[in-house]
Image 1: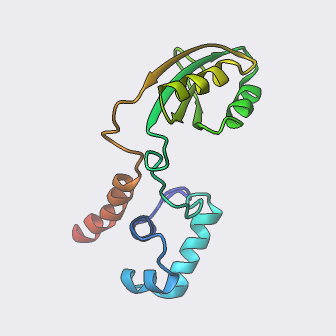
Image 2: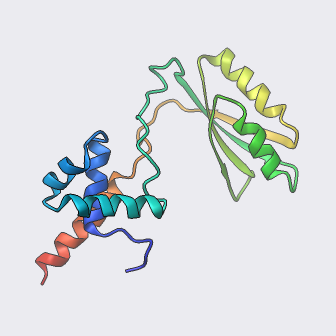
Length: 166
């Protein structure tokens, strides 16, 4: 198995922490049926490999007053990706930026409190030196929110299938 792959126990541990991020190591060990030291070693290894990046709270932006989500495709001047990305990171309402292939160079997710507020945010984005053109779309709903659960469940289930087929 490549070093980057998760095994079933890793996946089960991550699923457990996804559902209950405040669980302690001892309770995780009890629920998984393994030793406390095993859970701690797995957490340390997952953290060292960059798979487990932390335990941030899951925040609802709408409840925080940012009920509008928009996506912008940005075309930028050649060789300015780092500079533009840094300037976008300084705009509080910019939640994430991805370098992409295709029509644009950067794909930006941003939030706003209202249409007027979104116009202000877009104006800030367009004002970033190196941004040549933007195309913005407003999200009407989020039928599939950001997730990793299906990947973890598949990995956790693969060992169960392997065990049953032996």
